[in-house]
Amino acid sequence: MMKTVLIVDDSAIMRKIIRHTLTKHDFNVIGEADNGQAGVDKYMELKPDIVTMDVTMKVMSGIDALRDIIKQNADAKVVIISAMGQELIVKDAIMSGAKGFVVKPFNEEQLISALRKV
Image 1: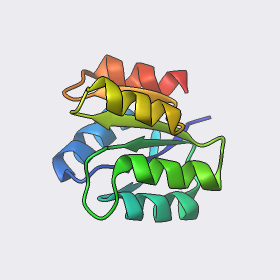
Image 2: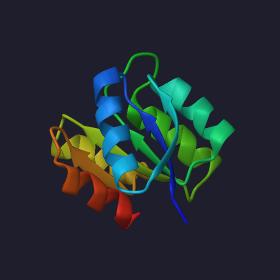
Image 3: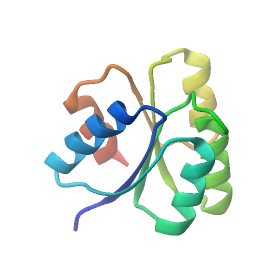
Image 4: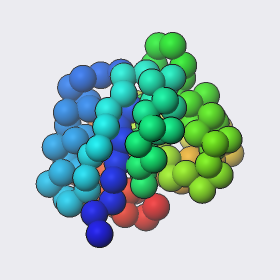
């Protein structure tokens, strides 16, 4: 069965790249959001199998959105996709419940591999 994915990123171009890559590899992108708060709302509404989450966004950061989603569903599968590969942020994300981490710029294989793992 195709896994459903919600893409949360403030960059329309990045959302398009992620959507294109995932669709090509048999993931079903069921929604997109351009900030953390919208991401949490969409998560509650759509209940996707996996969420890809950017870190730096307006309104609410990806880490805060991740925490909110995990509060609602401890088993949520969130993969952080961020240009900031700093160890601290990665640790924070994993401690907050992220199931994976992909650093931008990523190649297709890194992204697909991270999503397949979860």
